[in-house]
Length: 166
View 1: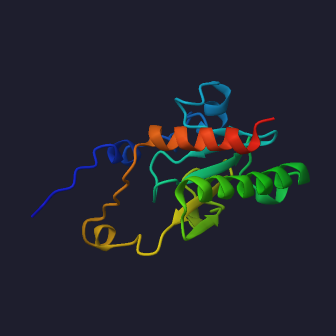
View 2: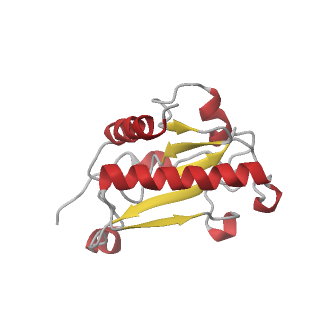
């Protein structure tokens, strides 16, 4: 039997996000103004793009409003518009640098619906390729991600700057 080691997953498994008193990463990371450390390749007026540290596929990102809310129905119109425009920009960036065959774009609202961080809404954008699912997740509950987050971050950052620098 062969073993595929993915020790970085333990950080996700042992995640303390839900513990009482834990600060919201989607509020704290952008405030830190260290976009490379926190994998934030793009900021708009009302939201930001952040690479998922535990991606389902290469290029898995999230678009997150700065406004801390877990209630989609309470998001102001200007935040909703900026979110959608940033999702569109992000899809364009991913298409340019990764050439996927399709995308999963969505938001899990509430813990029951699968939201890992349910107190702060965020959209997931996951690029997909024909045949990108294989036996690994089924047999060994392992997903192979073939590029480092730092390398992916640099590609995203450069393409956002190329397309959307003011």
